[in-house]
Length: 264
Image (cartoon, rainbow, N blue to C red; front, top):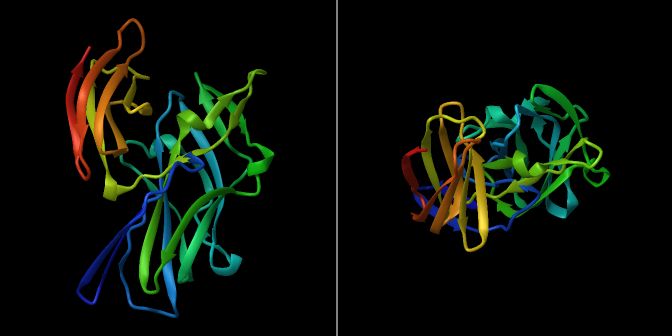
């Protein structure tokens, strides 16, 4: 979690790392300067996606709640609707909720889903069921102190590839996974593939942990929120093309490591 504050000419940067939460999600907090009004902070919630090998993933968002001081629940003004996660990949995102709340410690964000969730596979629409334990709201732990007169935003990185589970009966289930992207202590890897091969999976691995994405229609890809370190990258295209492995690529905080054009 990354928070910056700029007020009365002074700057303060507070960095806090959260482990993996529900949904390969990402929580990124960046405040801007505002006047202190009624001891309130302003919060905006945005959503992005790590793409998956489906035609589309439709998520029915009906509400966003914040659990604050003393268990107080604040319902944000939510842009309700059905969102195709694939509209928000490789650096794109969208605003799903915003609102004011009392300054203080925020322990949890709850993402409330409706029933119209679906995945499209080979042109066929499949309903996505949601486990009963999550129907009251997907609980995202953040434990962050919000200050009066400051605007924050939270970025939820929805990993569709890990969030959709094919059941033994052929039905699909939505088990959301969200990863926290911390801009203050992370970097990214990007590049292009040639020839463009739909469904090409790019995986970056370091110290036994892997992060993946899928190249877009133009062959471009980006894996964001990577801790600094050395990575091996595997690019797996659709057959008959064969995988390519690139080893020893360094990721530095605050920069994007460009792999250039990867030719099969």
